Image 1: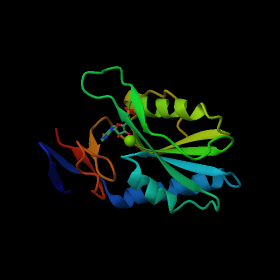
Image 2: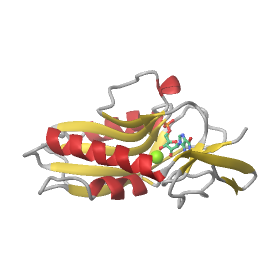
Image 3: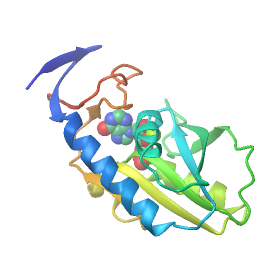
Image 4: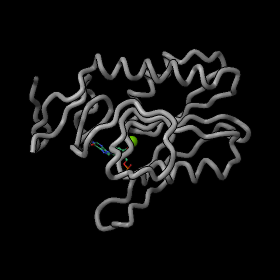
Length: 179
Ligand code: IMP
Ligand code: MG
C-alpha cells in the first residue's frame, strides 16, 4: 500500500494496475465480439479517458476501428445545474455508424447524458457506452451502460488518467482519497 500527496490531500493505493489491465482487456474482448463486422468509431471523452482509451484501443480486434476525441467540461463555480458544455466537437461523420463512447468514470451521469444527447442528434446507427469505472450510488441507472469495467463506492479517486485538480493523471494505479 503506497501513499501519495496531491495538493492538500492524501491518497492511498486502491486499484493496482494489474487489475485495471485485466478489466480493460476483458472489456476490449467483449466489445470486439459484440461489434464484429460493424463500422465502429470509438469516442474518447477528454481529458480523463485518454489513458483508458489508449489501453483499450490497442486491445480492440476490429480491423476497421477508428478513434476520435471529444472534450467537455462541467461549468464549475457558482453554476449548480450540473450542465456541461461542449468544447471540442467531432469532425468525423457519425451518421449511420456504431459509436462507442469511452468514459473514465461515470459519477452522477451528467456528462454521459449530455454526450449521448449531442451524439444522437447526428443519427448514428447505435451508441454504446463503455466506462472503466462506475459509481452506481449517485448514478442510479439514469441510462443503460453497455460496458462497465469496475463498480466502486463514492470515494474520490485519482490515477490512470483521473485527476485531482489536474494532478495525478500520470499515476499507473488508481488511488483513493484518505478522509
Ligand atoms: P459525472 O458527470 O458526474 O458522471 O462525472 C463525470 C466526470 O467527473 C468524470 O468524467 C470525471 O472526469 C469526473 N469525476 C467523477 N468522479 C471522479 C473521481 O472520483 N475522481 C476524479 N474525477 C472524477
Ligand atoms: Mg471524464
